[in-house]
Amino acid sequence: MAKKPSERIRIRMEGYDHEILDRTAAEIVQVAQNTQAEVHGPIPLPTRIERYTVLRSPHIDRKSREQFEIRTHKRVIDILQPTAKTIEALNKGLSLPPGVDIKIRVIGAKG
Image (cartoon, rainbow, N blue to C red; front, side, top):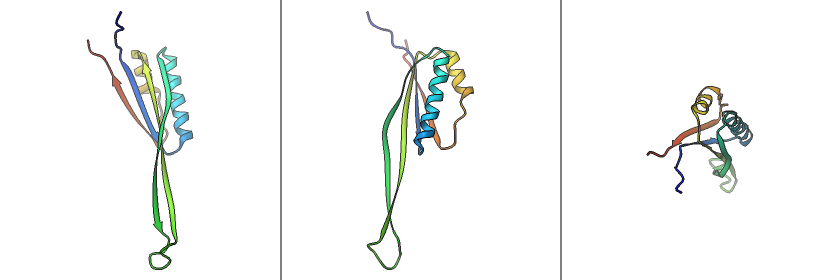
């Protein structure tokens, strides 16, 4: 028996503050579960760390430097077998806080 492949929604979120990102992910999971959709996640992905080294003074003390870093946290949520209610609730019911970037991709099987 071959299982028929089904449609799913993959939500990928990025943000600089992990607490806000986790709160948003929990809200998305709650909205999806209220519409009887099966949810996998949130799955944390590796954090991207960008480091910058800056000279403290432009003229003297070449060895005196400061280092800064930006951490970008990422999460993935898969919603399996979404219904029309699920898609409608995600479009209307979500209020994204500033600093959270979200990408929604529908992965479906044709045929």
